[in-house]
Image (cartoon, rainbow, N blue to C red; front, top):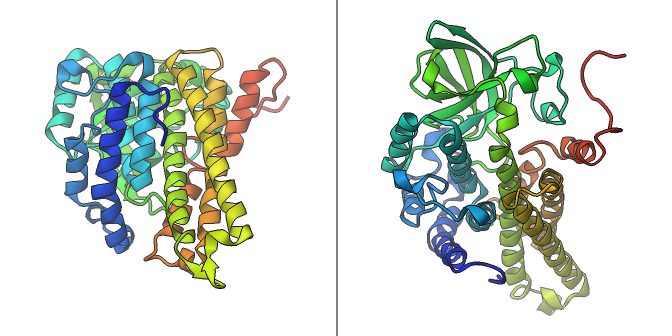
Length: 411
């Protein structure tokens, strides 16, 4: 764990997160592996874990200081997000998912929400350690493919919002929403103009959980990252006051302040899972004896361990470059964001696979916990866009004049 290039504040924050993970999160996960499989979502993660995150100051990153939050240096905010996300995911990626949604949505709110709503909801967020935020974008009939991008009416949101008097009436459905099952406040995207492309006709709204017409339909039971409760949300003639409109018509264009850091944080969480897999495997192969010698002295084992370490460092290097590009608002930031999302997803999955195989039969045992890291790594292939859609976005950004079109009527 190198401190090279980190500020003093970043070093201190990382160390406090590492201590929290080592003393609280990891011991809980190892001792209570069965809780991941409880089918009552609210009973999986005890309240003490989020309360612990609050005590070390990582639950409300991105909330403006004027409202009592932990405001980061804007010149390196995304890099700091990545540093902290990696450390938390080293303990548990589901917990990291819970927390980073708060960070990313807070960035949106401080940019677009009216001051009186910032005052109300940031206050609520700080008062209640269990309070979570969620970003409602994905729908049953459109997800990663919408972000290639293509700008045709056929790609528009199925969720619709219509202005009636001083209110907006919203109907539709969102699914695969991180924190969707238990969030207290949602940012919801809806089509507000069916006659134009989605980039001109999509608006975003701030919606409290107790809004009449909002129903939390289900918790999606995923194969990994199970300590974050992914949800499906339905809107039936849901009435939202006009001051809860965040961005009208250009919500997708303005959401880059959520999406860009999101790709970086996604890769950082993935990296944290890889680091955990490597650390535990390195400990195992230096202590387990087979054939009369510890495993690491077998050449095949040593080669795999070296491969794991190399993949981790390669992901870290690209993540560093991409996070700096986002902080600097560099022209290649979008390309690098998607590159690191793809690269981390695939390289860390290989790291986790090696970890399972080097643990032998123990790697497949639920109570050992190595298979959990493999499951968690597998989820990242589909989070914040699929890897193939991300590759198409890379090409469209690099070669906009010649890249293919993927939606709309056939010519």
